[in-house]
Length: 229
Ligand SMILES: C[S@@+](CC[C@H](N)C(=O)[O-])C[C@H]1O[C@@H](n2cnc3c(N)ncnc32)[C@H](O)[C@@H]1O
Image (cartoon, rainbow, N blue to C red; front, side, top):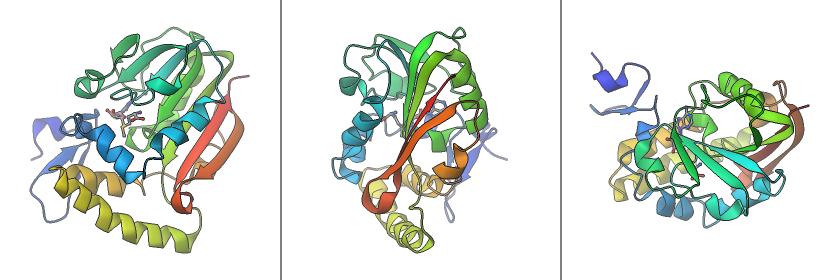
């Protein structure tokens, strides 16, 4: 039987007796304190530039940082009023946003039309349901409001995706072992294959697609901006 905390959804590393609970953000609990440093290292210092490019296409005003974690994106939000939402109190505890809310993207505890923008970086592959989350985002955005997402996946073409898969299946467990969180980083590697490519995932949602582009080595990072009509 799975441990109680893992009844909803667990990832088990082959050959390991330990499971990583991915259902409520607790996969990030053990690595909260070192998450930002490891992220910067793994992205070769580009993680903030990828966030900044997406944020530059969002309106000013009230912004929801969905899965805001430790608040790594706060410096690129400028004068916006920021509400950070995350299911992990440990990640959120390190966040200095104006308002912090413990909740999940699939059930946003906010009124209809209450945000000018929603931003989400490196979160979508951790969601229980992308569809439910985008429906919720569409509900809380005002008409003309925008959703901006930075996400990780695999490069677009089969050969480069295979090269990237081979590389990340070695690099991420090594980094995880050095960071004392091997299971978590093995999970992060496997999560890169979880979702369809963004070109498919965002083609048909309640929001209108404004732009979608690839970034990073071999294009394994994507940025996407969608608007509520
Ligand atoms: C890789 S971290 C990204 C944190 C931050 N957005 C950043 O740019 O550094 C992923 C975050 O997504 C959160 N998360 C996991 N499941 C979630 C869900 N269902 N809804 C919202 N956030 C979720 C995790 O707790 C974690 O803080």
